Length: 282
Length: 82
Image (cartoon, rainbow over all chains, first blue to last red; front, top):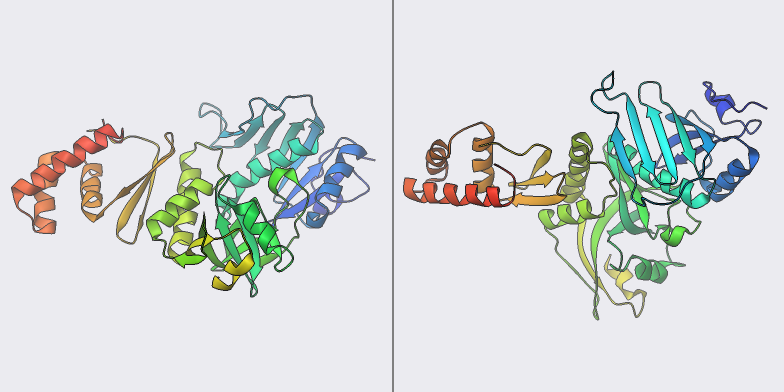
């Protein structure tokens, strides 16, 4: 068995090595693990997102001890003094350290061999990647309604979990915590996500046309009111996951959020946690 | 007047939204403020920006000057210019 980073996409994602290719939000990432245990953990956790195609970026994973402090990841480019125009991307936290060569698409990931660590890395990396692919990773709940995804951005306590529990069983849930949204072929889509609240497993690898985005408010009475583009933009930017202080990332996020604020805002949903009657309003 | 670095902006429905990347704050500028902002970005002085504002929005030169001074003071307080 070989454990080195492969350059051929087929061999990279082959089960004969310790590689896994994951496809999230329609974008594939490849990982080559140092042994079968870490690989098996990841393959099991993300079983609905394992793919067999050419990954956009590939990472050689090595196991390293580490604590989750500092807890907040940092996404940054190589120092400007480094040779080459923005050739290296760094995604770093106490328990993972990724360096990606943006020119070759090959990178290294040193990570504690824990699912929580790997999951946090994926969330951090996709938060950087999605704006570059016409989208963003939104702190939001989302479910299917009449063949389209309705998305409810909200920070902790906004009601994402409550709403998801009320909709569960009646509608396909994309996630109750983090939902990738992307524009592809001129249309916005929301994607099934492996990222759920409290690091729970779940999610299916599906995409749905984006029907509408609603601001959430808990209320005694169900209603849908208007939400202006400015308020919508503020909501989307507050709920977009971003660990980069880079100008290009901010510009891309603002562009994606603006497109959604202008074209896909359904309004403000005030909902009662007494039951799923609010679903009829959407 | 120097405009702060690390800002990203986008116009939506006539309003200009500016993200202060380091402070992680979103500022919303109405059409008048957005017009003045663009003047300042082009390097115009407060006096010239006020004259353009008066011409563009058909307000008296005195009102335009007052508005411009107030706007610049607000921008300084928000740390967007120095």
